Image (tube, rainbow, N blue to C red):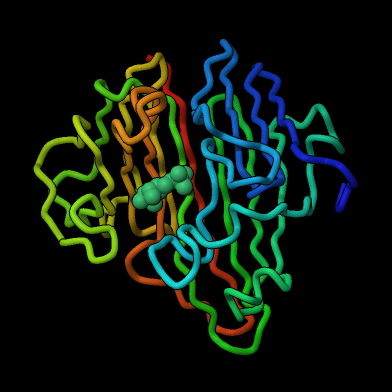
Length: 276
Ligand code: TA6
């Protein structure tokens, strides 16, 4: 499968009837449907899949910069076709947990923005009601590598019903007030609800947050190695889209990760769809 000409996406199908589509552009999971057809993820009406811009929806990558910073917002990993490292989906259609592994390595395009030598490896595994997203960053160079990043996950939701639980009382950066120099605030002791534009980076978040979506499935999101959680709703800046999604993102946003030469940073985000 590596380097297969013309391949733009990979479909994972599970014996339960669940399915996921992963685009090589940005290694972006663009849909994750349950056996009843309900899609847990959301793609905006303005999403493009032809490479003319990063995919606006699903689970895009922000790497090696969450932003803002010296690079374009969200870095370059969203703009590029990743290579398929391996996929059990094609090799073994009966695999109980189909998965695909994608790889991104430096090019002249990335070197212009980011000098470090790296290999980013992203494995997506589909289970009946679970999506496992494992990201690793290998420092293939001989100097320390630093990055910030996020899984910029767009979840289908009824915005007025959304509650994000697990962030109560945390310190957060309020990027609505100032995207470049956000003030630190203390979150109330209640779940996050959304009644206007929200762009908040919750620092040192717990390993699990829960999202009430207003749809038949709520979400449990467990993570390892992503210290921050971002909650974003553009509200009426995107009038056609905002009522239908919330971004709840596992992130390394405030303090960059440093990977020593030759070493590897590993992470995991496990999203459970919980039927109500
Ligand atoms: O992750 C939140 C955020 O960085 C917001 O600050 C906002 O800029 C948004 O992402 C943009 O997302 P998009 O998918 O349109 O690039």
